[in-house]
Length: 161
Image 1 (cartoon, rainbow, N blue to C red):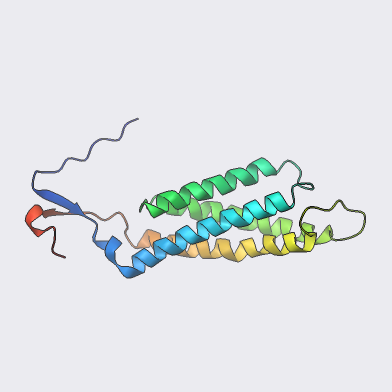
Image 2 (cartoon, rainbow, N blue to C red):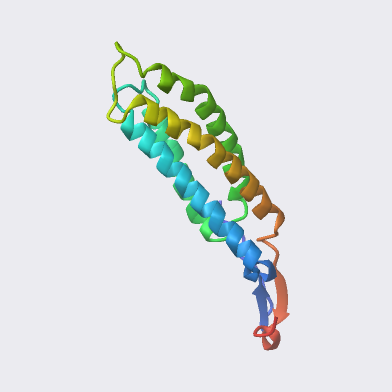
């Protein structure tokens, strides 16, 4: 389905007043960095624990790809990705909390070992949790900042703020 084109009157410029604020720009940057850090952590854990992961790799690669896509859209001021990122962060934090202990349990004799040590993978898995909590906080902060607010101004006033 094609989105309807936005109709504007000739001589009217659409501005986004909230996007120029330093606090809004820093929130967007933090959200993008947290999404990319989350994707990076998931990829390191997935690749580092490849030998011992059981059928979870496709899900983890999908999670990383989705987070990278969300970071791209957040970088383009798409406010709609923020609640999606928050909901995915809740699930990832829960999965990290549940699976983190199992990495430490594998750090004993008799278990197959991964490329990275099990204790390092457990630590990285638990590091995912605060990153996801920060992502939820900053994504909801960005959602409340009104990235999508548009104002129509006559073209003669477009340069003024």
